[in-house]
Length: 415
Ligand code: COA
Image (cartoon, rainbow, N blue to C red; front, side, top):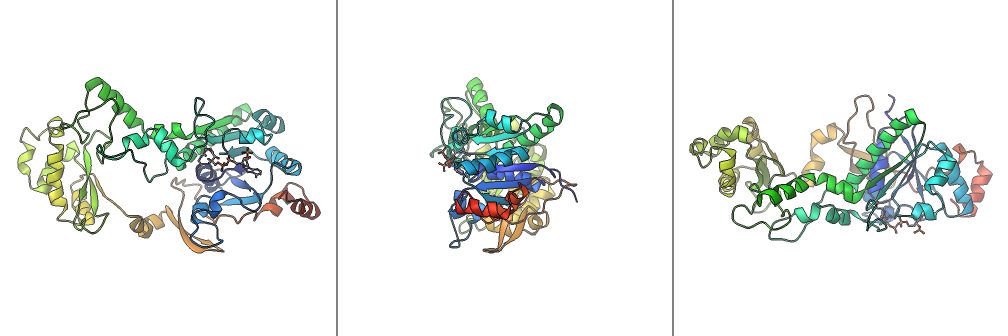
């Protein structure tokens, strides 16, 4: 079967997580992704957090499926020649170097346009234009500067970063969408363009509900669905909301049977207005349906702690899966807190290709996430990540280099 991005050639200068997330997604949609790495070391993540000595780490393998790898020193004159040929033949150059690195290498936007006016140059940077535009950035810096850390955690605790890599993988997703849009526009203009996704912007975009709450709080002085209401005062900035729901329906994480020993024996419970009578029935508080202190959503906001404590009395008598089964029968929105072990073993996630088992010649079998976006006419088959420089000869041959020239480049440590 054909793939959505068949025929699109990506010159992949990305490393670590944000950029590789983007190019892996494009590869899953069928693009030919050529990852350019320095000989010897390659992408730094190949050697980071290794679980098997001298074998590419899971960090690397899980971000670089379906790609080809070539080694190339792009700071040498001969390396630059190879890179120029690649720029002429590819559709998109993707990079997430520190600011200015591509220019320092001699490949400014105007130089790239001279070589290939149709080329799209897509970059992840930590920040957009402004005071921090020249700074290097990693995941947690983006979470801290994009509004996630100041709004995550509990009101009486320090700012907290989340386990979801919203700065890296989140920005990579944005960049992929920008590239596909630029490819589409190129169909009518014939021109390439620059695509920028800044990590601070991507995190802030995912934190929009907190910018919403900042403005609500400034107008009304309080946020009634937040845990500190009504006991604690609100300050100048939107506070950390613990496990309160970010939406218009109050929610919280509640203990389930076994919570004393199992750190994940919890359920997320949402007191959705539409199913309030059902909630009261399940927890045995039918009187709350007509009691005016509880009957309406605004009335309940003043009693949320008490309501969740009462529901928790009930959830503590059930395992998280029993609680979810019962609540789902009444259409009460809820979800079990799943551990990574439970997710890894979940058969339906394997069946849908969201969790995939891959074979790697050096590490054997391992699990990875598959494509979270499912296209009916362009199914994703996840293939293993390339070894360092595995496709150097193949790609150079496609560029017109013969075996003797390739051997000379290797001798001179260009590849
Ligand atoms: N041949 C020759 N030189 C190469 C090369 C190659 N194939 N690939 C990379 N390099 C060089 C770069 O040109 C750069 O040289 P310069 O500093 O002399 O200009 C150098 O390697 C280091 O690149 P850099 O991007 O600065 O790596 P770093 O390890 O110092 O920083 C980051 C890593 C992630 C902090 C930085 O790249 C960054 O801030 N990126 C943008 C934001 C981002 O994506 N962060 C999230 C990462 S998950």
